[in-house]
Length: 292
Image (tube, rainbow, N blue to C red):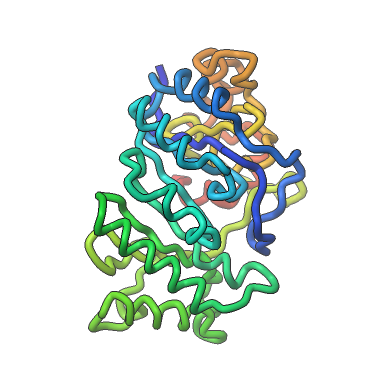
């Protein structure tokens, strides 16, 4: 039986922002129903203990995010939430004191990625205020993300894109150093107990219209992660935001059968041979991080 370190459950395909780095989904706007979510948890329980409540969409838009966390706890899951943070004030009471919640990732680069964003200081400050409160009251881990560097780091050098955010972080956590001095791409800077900043390059979502990347390749899809879109479509990884690699639908076929199905096995066995069998995977630059 396959076990996954990460399991992505998209609880909504809707987002309140339109960021340049995150293409809008062409799929129908939808929110997962409680009974559907519970059924998914029951089916994936033998395969994972950790769930992530997104693929596309903004999870804090879900009106029952607190109930989703409660049922996750009842079923024995630890939950990670990745959010743009714009709705944190409205959802604060739904997130505090939730034992299922293990980690919250705040994509701070969303502010600059969304045209028309206003009051960056207010946006960041509200997130920092919540982060400090939940860390003080629980064991939740906080990760602030600035995934907007270009490949040669010229984005920061030329435009000082992140300096305002970094200044706020340095002030709020009383740092006696400049974060830039500690920056190593792909590693986190510890700001406080259970509070981290991660900076990385902006990544491109794989697209069938993109050029293929030739040569052998490897990926952890269906090896340490899998996902389910809000309509029940099972996908091999969190970057298949349109369900191109449709392995089956959990609302119609048991997950244990889907993950051992012909298409799933071809993908898994292909990567074992360093062979990239799916077209979308051949057009995914993210897998180059794992290629050997």
